[in-house]
Amino acid sequence: MKTIKYIIGLIICGLLVLACSKDGEMGMPGEDGVDGQNGEQGPQGEQGETGTANVIYSDWFSSLFPDDIASTNYSFSVIAPDLTDEIVENGLVIGYGRFTSPTSAEIRVVEQLPFSFFERNQFYSLSFSTPPATNSERAFINLRSMDGSPIGEPFFEEYRYVIIPGGIPASGKPSINYKIMSYKELCTHFDIPQ
Image 1: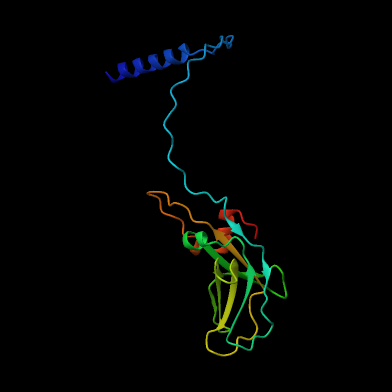
Image 2: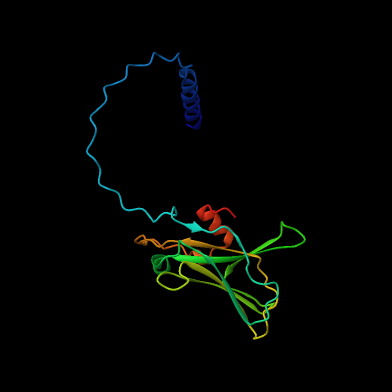
């Protein structure tokens, strides 16, 4: 019985192999059919997430701190015309300080403000004023001593700010926390030149 099954299996395999032949040449293409009628207009899609086209960033600007600060608090300001009450209430303003090594321009340190530099007992922060305040539309870079001693030599040489206008949060989707992004991640996300 096993022999008969084996022989029948071989015959079937042989027939399958012999029944296969090379395909013939491809035929001529047929004529195009008539286009059908367009369907009904679909419903309007949901509103997309707020885009990043309105993100504003300053160029790096030089520190206006003196080389050696004898007081415990010091600040300077720059004009920031894009700072508005709307942005302060609904958006985000992030400041950064940058230090470049005197031995190699390739070595740069960029830190988000506020920043505590414990080695020098210095605390850096960003504040701003909007209309109708006096000195409105200005960004303030603030530096204070953390231990009550004179500040001394400031660490950062340059500063910049990034303004991210607020939007309507997308329903059911978590919003991105830009404050926890590194400087490099934020620049990549918003295509900001570093």
